[in-house]
Image (cartoon, rainbow, N blue to C red; front, side, top):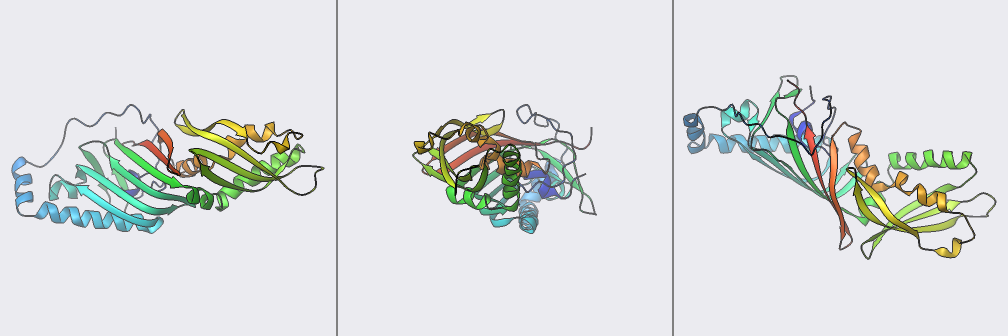
Length: 288
């Protein structure tokens, strides 16, 4: 059982409390046997305007549910077969676009989310829980900026991640990270760290340039190289090897996956100082 009809569909932090077993986002099959009202009933629902009104009421309810847990400016478009079908939880499509989104400390400039099948079936109970009657594949496109990443890196959960790394570094007398931030330039990510190294007074600035790649459905830093080579007398290889551990993009996805969203990144690119990502998500049906 899921908490609300919206949280079953959206992912990316809109997904809350999914209890279904996980499956691959790559191998979904859309439902073939549509269980709808008669064609006559659907025809009259359209010509009388009932379907249009039902869609608008549904869109308003979905937007209201999103705003309970997520900051941002959202537009919702719901496609319905008929008012009766929509009331029973059966609908054609759902598209959600958002700007200036903040969810669980993760900042996203833009997001476009849409169901990928022409038939979706989710039943909402009186207590607010819902049952997903058919698998719901979802396509997601994201845009994140340099400012988004830096604000995300100020979140308490990201700081906790750095503290965990500092605990390890301190235990082995390697280094501790004092602060971090991101720069995007010439289609590369520049990860800037101020670190404290044992027996060296003050903090040292380390700048690592990297490309972005997708590996096994996750975003990773690739071809990392140390930019400020005046640290040549200091062994910084361990810092480079730990870069993906504190990757803020991967962190942004994983903190949302903590809510059991089955999210797989398909593509990532850097364009005009923006990070663009495409992902798939699969919400599994509750009933067999």
